[in-house]
Image (cartoon, rainbow, N blue to C red; front, side):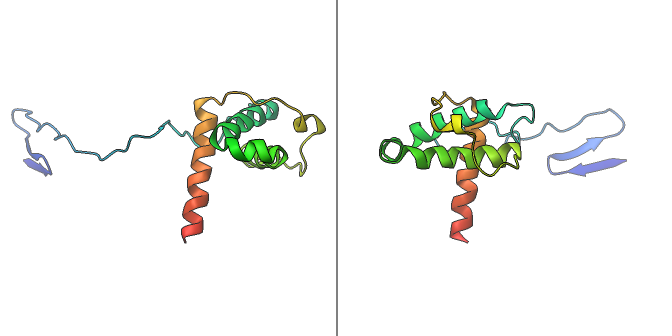
Length: 123
């Protein structure tokens, strides 16, 4: 019995199996990181919010310098969405919290939301 595949046929008598062929994948030079879906549900909102602030500040330094409160509101909305929080307004301490360097999972989540937003605007 012969089994056909894209790489050729396999032999049921001797067990020879064709080796998969390499496939070329086009890439771009950009900051890439693994996106594993939703943020960890056990992550504390303070951690995610601080990292979202840090990501916003490094992504849009001019906006951060001009309208820091807008950046804090944006970070809160991202925190609410990622951790599925019901609270509408951020806790008062969030308005003075220091930005933290984002971890790869948090940066990946925020970057993926930015891509989704841009694609939705294109239609």
